[in-house]
Length: 474
Image 1 (tube, one colour):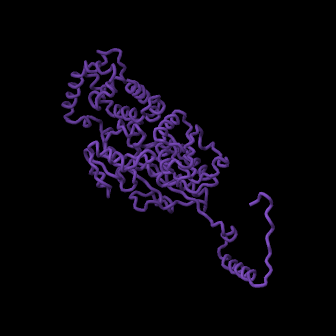
Image 2: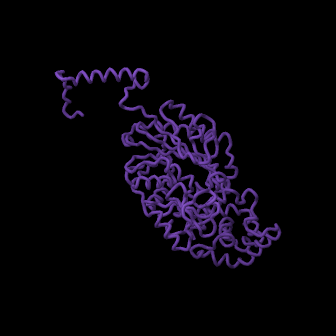
Image 3: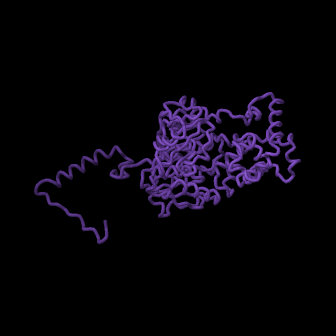
């Protein structure tokens, strides 16, 4: 089966430090990237356990043509996963010949370590912690269906709908086949942690998007009205782009950029499945996009979610050891790129509102980048105060930083995230620039204009006609 062979290839590359799970999965030709990503992550998490079981059972000695990484994936599916998918192909009978020995070795390992559950076999760093208790958030794709219809579908499948949540405690208490409507986002359904919907027919048909709540905040807070022109600067893998399209109701235009061809190809598949028709994809570095290009003269909304350390992603430490604490050199390099990207985005002439977001917990990539941009554009942009009831705010590193939002498994029951909303500070077009700079003069000037208008409208006062506009003028 292609799933298992591809998973083994990705796993071998990860363990050989040739890339991260996420990057290698998106670079593969396997269509269901979510399914592949989940399988590789879980196999990697149990890697040491699987190695011990495979060695104890003598599997590789008995099956000399079976590659070690493929064996690890297959044994995970047999013993720890949900069983072989799609029948398992030619691998199922091979593994079933050794099933009794493999199960016995797993049981022996539990006895030896004095544990009863599979997850108790994990090393401390790989055990599920707070992050594993984050609920499964599912965004209803309103381009294809409605939250009401999705709720009805799940109810017919035997799920128990608990209504709209009123607090985080409601989300923490979710168990079994119960689900809720999120209290903030009306199109977001919430299921118990570890609920697997990758094979659900509504997900495969693009009616559902498996997307963390924190990842839904950027598009929601950008809030472009239908008909708008929006720029998605670092767009792949595309969940936020599809969310923007849903908010636009496919009316308007999204210019989406990413310089990775493989990620862009996967994104095109995702957007097609989601029914997105208002998006133009471009394999291009956002920093090379000219703000003066006439194609973007109507762009008033920009979503900038640049490459970051990923230190807020619960799965990242599993795929990149040490990724949770990036080195100072790496942080400096990332922050430098993020600063350049944000400054560039703010230079688009018609821009009115921008959302900057990362899945990082590091101040260097978050508050420091936003403060740098505000200092580079004094008086032109401000931080918009958003979601005043959101419990986790930006670090108090500069005045107004509390308008930024942070998220974490501990405080918001989501992945780690940062969001800032910047909006242009407008000077009324009816007020001349000199008057805006010297407001103390405007009152006297207004009185003089009023007197002139009264004299001009008095009976018998000659009226002066302005010059006729030239042909074609306006």
